Length: 297
Image (tube, rainbow, N blue to C red; front, side, top):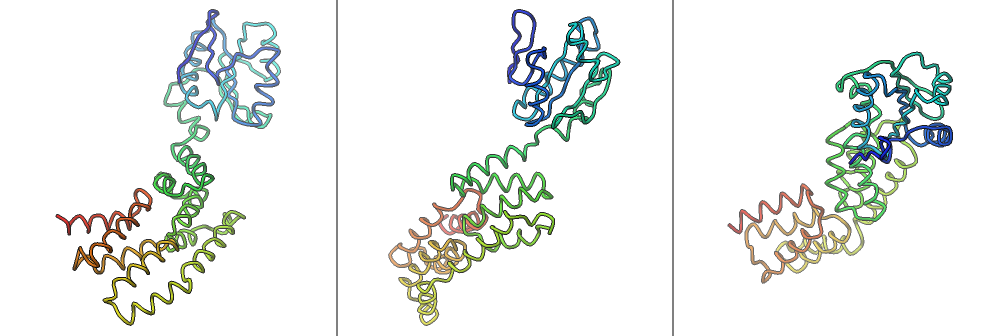
């Protein structure tokens, strides 16, 4: 994010705000209800202040949606009164403000490493951004694109229940019921909220849909004649429609490893059509593609 400076030397980045009597309530009191506000009490004549302010601006400017840096020029008489209200006794002083009240703070300059450690719990993490993208894709019913992002987010922090539940939602949306069920079992009781209960219900619905009368009938036919390729293809298509892609692929590959042109090439075409609909990074799809490639070449 670029940082602009106006003709008076003031920073004009979206989340870097110079505080005055008019905007104090909106930026600090009201703004802290939505996100963290870091109040920087500074003075232009203080080298420590200038040094710290530059570091804070650089640290927070990339996070306009998470943090506001509210800069209070204590050389201004009105702002001196504000600093006194906050109990500021030295310049520079930084106060963290959230939900209308101070939660911590410090006085004096600090190096970049200290600041990063101090604000680590407040700065957005890469998995937070990934989770936001996943939730947007879930809302759009785009489970295929959401799957690799959800898996990446969980790899970054395997302890977070909110990421697990989002991934379970995506897995159910792509028909990976067993993997979803395994992940559901790892959600502890404290995180078994309404969202969790809705995922449990969706899993049950997926299971019920997985064994339709059509699928049951085709399974019976195939058991009676394993060489009936037309029935095998029909069963694979039905399984695909019931979001049982992994089982559908297994059915087709069982024949294709012996005869790539089985049923006049229709079996391979059906397999390729199913693969084309599966999410990028799907483990089952990747495994089948590798096996198919080895057969072709």
